[in-house]
Structure formats: C-alpha cells, structure tokens
Length: 300
Image (cartoon, rainbow, N blue to C red; front, side, top):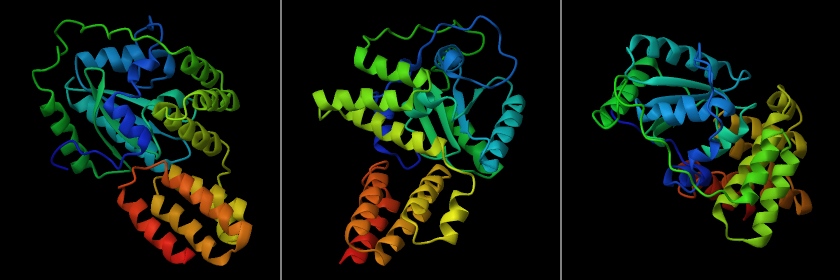
C-alpha cells in the first residue's frame, strides 16, 4: 500500500465518509481521567478520537475477541504506535460492546482500521495486513496530514461544531446505548415509515440488524452449517459469521450454492437473505458484482 487506501465500502461506509453519518454523533461528556492504554469506548470516543484527531491522526482499530487475527492486529498497532514517537495515536475499539461506533463507521468486517484526522475519516482498510504494508499505510496517513493539524505541542484544536440533533435518531441511539437492539431497530423503522427515502436510517437499520444477528452467533456457526449444508437457518448464521470475519465471497457463495439446491418458498427465502447481504456493500463492489452474476446463473 503506497497511499491511504479505501476498503470496499458499504452504503453505510459511503455515508459515513461523506458526512451523512457524522462521527460527531458519538460525542459524549469528556472523560476526566488520563487514559492509561489505547482502549476506547463510546463514553470517551469524543475526547480520545475526535478531539485528539485535531492534533494528530488517530488510527481506530475495531476488533473482536472472537477473531484472533484482529487481536493480533491490535498488538501490532500497539507496538507501532510506541515506536512512532507521537506522530499518530491509536484507539482500539472492541466492536460488540461498542455498536454505535461500529455503526457510525459502517463496519461490516473485523478487523477494520480507520484513520481519523480533523474529526473526519481519512483512510481505511479491512482485514489483516503484513507489517511492512501496515507501516507503509501509516506513513502515507501521516504524510497526508503533515502541517495540517496542530500537533502534540500545538493548540488543543478547535471544538467540533455542534449540530442539531434529530430526536428520532437520538431515540434510536439511546436504545443502542442501553443494549436494546430491538428498540433501536423499531426506532429506525419508524423513521423510515415517515421518510421512506431517508438513506441514513436505511443504512443504520441494515447495520443494526446485522450486528444484532452477529452478536448472537454461536462460535461454531460455520462448522454447523458445513455439517448440514441444506439447513437454511444454519446457512444464514454461517454466512453472517463469514461476513463478520471479512469473507464476503464465502458468505455469498454459501447462499448461492444453497439456492441451487432449493426450490419454491425455500429458494425465495434464501435469495431474499442474499440480496439483503448485498445491500450491506456498495453495488459496484467486485464481490457483489461477481455474486450477482452467479446468482443469475443459479436462478435461470
């Protein structure tokens, strides 16, 4: 990687990067204690990511304890930030207990790495990368903002401008804060009932539904589906797990193979779920384009 490279964006990612899903929606009362490590939660995201990124770029690493590869990536970034003498800062975010952060960033795979500068996403990638490529990516991030931020010794940076809050979205976010996935889903559905074209609500609802399912997946979901390839519910769970683990081709292929073996209502059910998974990605995503071609062949 010779420059900050964007990962394959979902609609939610595209919205986040364009400002439709603003990271400032995660603002919380500032923490008073100096952090002793790089772990960040919703409670201190504003202070340790948004405000801090006014001084130096902050690299967010979203990971899951259920993904050993993502844990190893966290360890790599922790070592690199210690070696880079304050040129950038690190924020490690465990995805499952911090769903609002993952949702605002449109995260669909673990691990996801996002560089934030000046309170806005700058560059990102998904999946593990060899250390030399990670170092090259970091160097490009630092170079891209050189002279544009206040730096360690400069002023603390400007406050992020306050934005008017939509009480409907606030209700959904409050439900997420309380771990009420069903309540958040209902709140976004209500927004869409009033405004069917609200793209932010659509993206948020897709993410909430996906993370709600992913949060409850059994660790052996893929093995269970492999042992019973015609079990539709098991296939759905395995496909969700594969998407969560940044394996969209495997997830799409699993459901397309199942479509080939089913008929009638069962086939329609699997096709509907597959299309829902497509909608988590940009329509031009190569994996989606290829899978749509395979789906057409499977159906006709």
